[in-house]
Length: 314
Image 1 (spheres, rainbow, N blue to C red):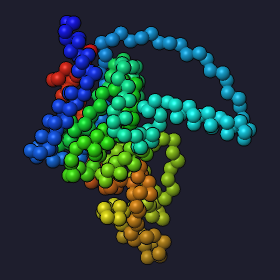
Image 2: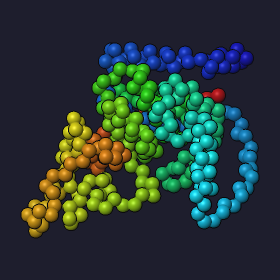
Image 3: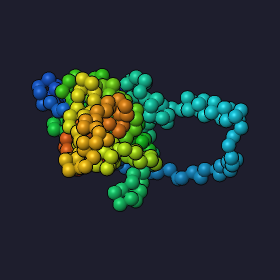
Image 4: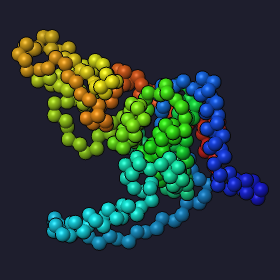
């Protein structure tokens, strides 16, 4: 048992398994086993065998002063907050801090210690566990693990996306990839920005975050006519990065159709708001079809737990 423990320690301190995995992927690419146009990204959790530490009671915070801070006091507070943010470890900072960090730095600073994690189930209840998370980027059709990341259970799923994306971009040659599909847990502006920098398109479920309703647009951010009928997604111009919408079908019998009130064609650049405007457009059948491919990573996660003992880690 001591020899086995020493072996595990050596493996955990080296990147040999990561290099072997990368060699396998590169060989699969060269032999045309991986020809995916969509990458699916998601995380899965698994418990540690370590005994969970007792919960430390945090001291009660002093009650905050009510009302607006004076200008001088606010400026000092903002300065202190900026200094505090700058001193934090990379994965405790906001996600946008990862955009300009190198891949080497991103992978080196991933927290690996077992921690308490929480996930909201579909019924709305929270599930807690003490352990780790595995973050995977999987080919949607080949189901090859293109990139992976191992972290503490407390790491937010969204904070693992940019390291995975940069790994795909910098370590592998996959010119056929066009889409990055993720669930609503990855709905952060920096992730859209990273995908756009790679020349790919984001297919990420929208997570409404205390946002007011967009006036003149439907829930999928398609423009609406004077009578609030949604324009229909027509096409995407990749050269100009522009979505094209055409008149709603209800306009055929609309008495206002010839009054010049509503546009016949509506165009919008996705760079106006990468989070709201996807290509193909949100809500379209094409978008839904691509998003369904995301289930590939869920299947791979299930295979790893069921057949490869991912649930039985030390």
